[in-house]
Length: 276
Picture 1 (spheres, rainbow, N blue to C red):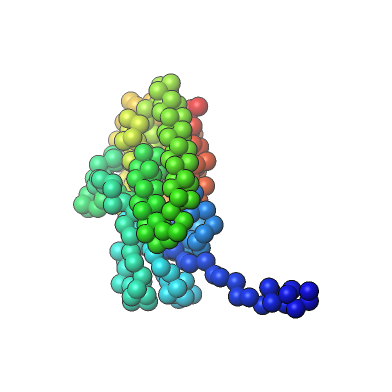
Picture 2: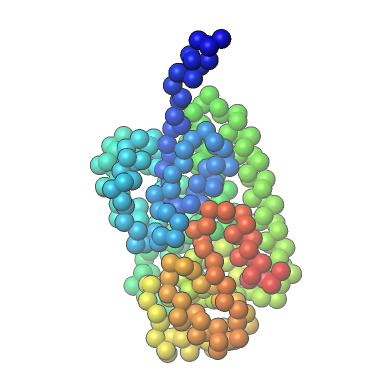
C-alpha cells in the first residue's frame, strides 16, 4: 500500500500547454470554450495600456513555452511582434479578428486627427463580434487538440447561447431608452455603438487633452443629443471628461474596456448608457 502511494505521487504531473493572448477579455473567451485544459496567459497585465505597455524580460519564458498566440489587433502586438517571434520561432500567431471587418478608429469619433488611418481594435466590446472571435478560438483549439473536439464544441455552443442572450438583453435596453448617445474619454466603444444604433462621441483619440474650442463644440453637440453619461477609462486622461461633466450635468462613470469579466462589464456599460 505504501509502495503504491509512493508510485502514484512520484508520477510526473502533466503540465498544461500554454496559450498566449494580448488582453484579459481574450482569456475570458478562451476559458469559456477550453475551460481549464490550457494555461491562458495575457501578455498585457491588468491596468496596463495596450498602446504603451512594454514586454517584460520575465515574460520571455512564458512566450518560449507557448504553442499559440491569439492576437486581436492592439498596438502592443505591432510594437512587439518581432521580439515575440524571435523569442519563440515556433510560436504560431492566430488572428482572432479573421472573420471581422474592422473600421477606422475615427469613424466613430467626434474629432479627426492623424490616427484616421488606424483600424479600431476594440472588437471585443461588441457581443455580435465576440461570436466571430469565439468561432476562431474553437477552430484553433480543435486543430491543436482534436481529441477533445466534442467537448470544445459543446462549450462553444453554450458560450454562443450566452452571448445571444446578452445581445438580446442589451438590444432591449436600447430599444426602451430615450438616450442614443454617450461621451467617452477614448473611442473604445465604436463597435458597440455601431451594433446598437448608438452614437459615440470621443473626447480624444491621441491620448491628449483637447483644446478649449474642441471642448466647447463637444458641449454643444452633447446638449443637442441629450447625453447624460460620460465614460472615463483608467488608461487615459480624465481632466476634460470631468470638465464636460460639470458643464453638462452628466454622470461620470469609470469603465475598464480591458476587464476580464467580459459579461458583467458589457452589461454594466449598456445599463449606464441606457439608464436601465
